[in-house]
Length: 306
Image (cartoon, rainbow, N blue to C red; front, side, top):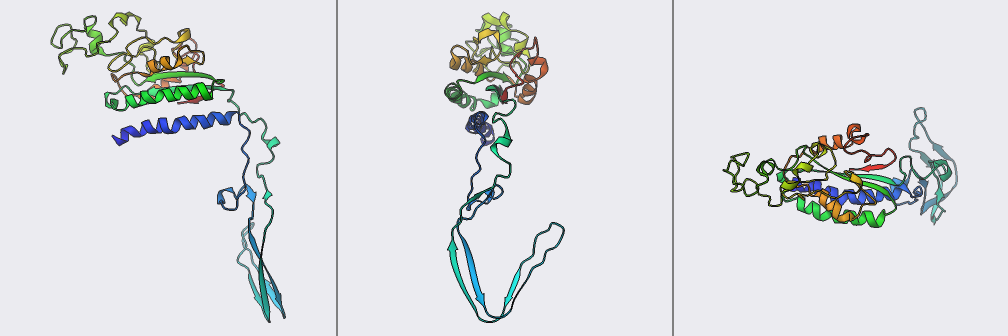
C-alpha cells in the first residue's frame, strides 16, 4: 500500500508547490546571489570573509620561504617557512567588507527576465489511472483537487491556462453495464447480461449508469489520450461534463470551474492503468492538431505541467 500511496503524495504534496514556484519564477526578476561565509555552496558566486585572523611576526636573523607548484595551471603545494633567532608573534582579528563577485555578469547581461516560452500561459494535464486497484487512493485524489483549483483561481487568475484530464484506458464505460442497458435491473444470469462470470447478483452494479445517453458516446470518448468529458463506470461521474465551447479541456473562462473539474476528474475505477501511453497520445500532434480530439489544448508558447 505504501508503494501505491507514494505517487499520490508525490503529485499532490510536491507537484503543486513545484508549479507554484515555477510559475512565480516566470515573471520574477533574476534571483540575486547571496554572500555568506557559512555556506560553501555560495563560494562560487562570491568572495566573503566574516572573520579572518592575521599574524604578524618579528624576527632577528635570517628567514627563508620555499614554495613549489606543479603542472601547467596546477595548484600550489604547501608553503614552509623557516626562521632563526628570536621570534615574537601576535594575532589580531580583523573584519573585512564582503566583496561581491558575480561570475555570470551583470543583470543587464542576462537580458529579459521572462524566458522564452513563458508568456503567462500554462497547460495542465492530469493523467489518471482507472484501475480498480486504486479504490483506496482515488477518493484521496479527488479530495485534493479542490486545493488545486483554489490555487489556480487565487494565485494565477491572470494566467491563460488550459486544464485537461485523460484516463489510462481507451475503452469507454463499463462493458457489462453497457450490455445490460437499458435495463439496469438485469440479473447476472439473465440473457440481457453479456457475461455469465459476474460475481454479483446484478449484471451492472452502477445504478446511475447513463444508459439513456449511450448514443452520445463519441469516437474521442473511446480514444486513448483524448480529454475526458464523459466519465462512466464504477465510481465515475456517469454523466456528460459541461465544458464550455465544446472542447475537451477547461479554460480560464469556464463557468463553474470547480464543479466542472471535479466532474472530468472523477474517471472511476473501470478500466486500465496505461497512463504512459495515454500521456504520449494526449500530447501527440494527431490529437492536438486540426480536427484532433484535443485540438487547441497544447500550445507552443505555454508551459506544460503533467
